[in-house]
Length: 348
Length: 257
Image (cartoon, rainbow over all chains, first blue to last red; front, side):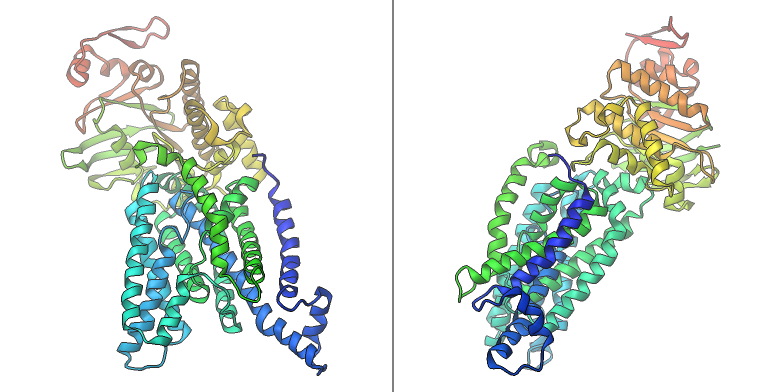
């Protein structure tokens, strides 16, 4: 495919993202025309019931949700790109290689045993659960990396099988934890099973915003290292890159972002696979441009997916994760068929 | 001395090790490493690149042990071309070669200039905008050669440069094997030390001023091509009965079977 200048692509994404957010704020069971949004948010003096109702819908429901979708989408897409660089394989997606499952198992563990050990029936706060999720994600990335990667690259089959194994372990743990859990815990554990943005509130937006800021600050610093990684791990070392240090930081950053995403919105699959894949087709694999573009496009994809998810069968809602999977699964099949290393017996 | 190995030993696997390797590669010198399959040639290079942990001895780059160098300063002086490449992402040829400039803090304009010259050196200018993954095996090898050439293109402060290549001619046609010989001459003339693993003994005789013969992980012979390439050595190390005659073109020893 012919490449498009990365500046044009980023400029396009930068212009379209705010427009899509405006549309998101307008669309829903009660339609609010876009040009009224600003006056609704700015005007606190108006006490007309319809105005107050609409202002509440926008500021308490739609605005946090669209921001959460944007930050989660940006995090997942960037993590996908970073993991694909780390694994030197376009199939490495946080949900496919078991990182999301690891995070959900870690979160369930904390919810159930945290309550048991601390001998308190009250459910632990979001921060403790997040620590569990991030720890679970770190263990998962680390395991898959150790199992599937050698000096020459990543075995696709081992990587995907490790993902299957970790997901199986995680779901077994989840079932076991569910057995011990009371009904409030059960409700919270079930949230991880399907990716959904309906739990949006300002506390969660703040959490994921901080994570996204850390991710977008640290990841681009390793853009050249990620490029060199694609040549091979040894080649990156020969180019003067402190490979072990970069690897550790990438594992921690991706685990942090995926873990927190799972805690606040569940397992939203395939965003990290689809977005980097499509963007590489347009602007090439150079991480200096790929990472920021992924952040913008990932945000856009998840906003659009959630917009469709909450309007298509209104007033009921679909989980946004179902929609991203519907888009992502065919891309995954395509990449799997195309995967050179899969067809190369040497790399199995 | 640009590169110096003193009684280097390392464990490769349970049944083979590198034992007591002595080697000096001087600035502007070309040293070829030859030996049968599994003799430890690639492992020797991996030991020099710190990919293999030494069980004894020391490897010095510009009189400083390789383990003492910080990664980036070392990468400015020492470029390594591995035997196989595993790049499966659609970088263009120019992007791949430009990665050779990662350790340097030269400007984009300088880098572009160096990349163009490196591509010209390996006869790849016409491929510049092509996607690396669609190239043939030989073209990929030439592009990777250009990448390591770009990495040590200019003299830098901190010492003499060194180029290490593992079978760079493996998938090249005859004309491009000649091109590699010219590339060695080009860099040797600038004082770059070159260490290269080769399978073609006659090519080794042609381009190297020193040949190291490895057998079962130890050094079986080292010296000038004339001193090393003998019928007795070929019999002992490669188990072949071959004649060594004088190459009518360049006067170097030539192995005929």
